[in-house]
Image (cartoon, rainbow, N blue to C red):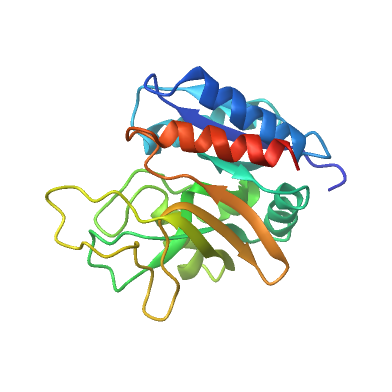
Length: 227
C-alpha cells in the first residue's frame, strides 16, 4: 500500500467499559503490521450520523481509505487488516456479511457497518451516500446498494461459525438459533468468526450491551493476545 494513508475508526458510547476499548486497541495493534492509525471515537449520536461526520474529519487528516470497525469486532491475525485495505484500494467496497431481517428488501446482504472498508475515491464515486438507515436499508446498507447500482464490486466476507445463539428480544417472533442471511447462506450469532477461502479474518461479539457480553469480548481478546 505505497503512497496511501488508510485508517481504522471504532465508535463507542458511554455504556462501553474502558476495558473493552483498551482490549480492542491492543488486539488491533497486535495484528497491525503496517501500523495503520486506529481511532477510538466516543459518541452519543446515532452510529450512522457519527460515521457520516467521521468521513469528513478523517479526510481532513489526510486519510484516503477508512475501515469502520465496531468496538466489539477485532482482527484475528496479521493478514486481516492488510487484506481488507488491499481490496478497498483495488476499488471494491468490502465488509462482513449482514442482513436487515426487520426490513423487507428481498433478503439484501450488505457490507456490515461493524466492519466495512472503502476508499474515499470509491465513496465519492458512489455519491457520498449517508450511513444513516433509510427506507430500504439499515445503518451503512445504502453504501452497498449504491455500489451494486454503480457496478462497483462489493466483496462480502461470510460467517464461518458462531459461538452462541443471539439474545432474542421479547417482541421478536423469530426465535431461531441464529440470524439469517439470504437463502442458502450460513447464519450468524454472538461471537461470529468471519473469513473466506484463505481462512479466518475477523471476530465480532455482537450484542455487546447485554449482560456478560463485554466479559465475553475480553476473554476473546485475551485469547487472541496469547496467539
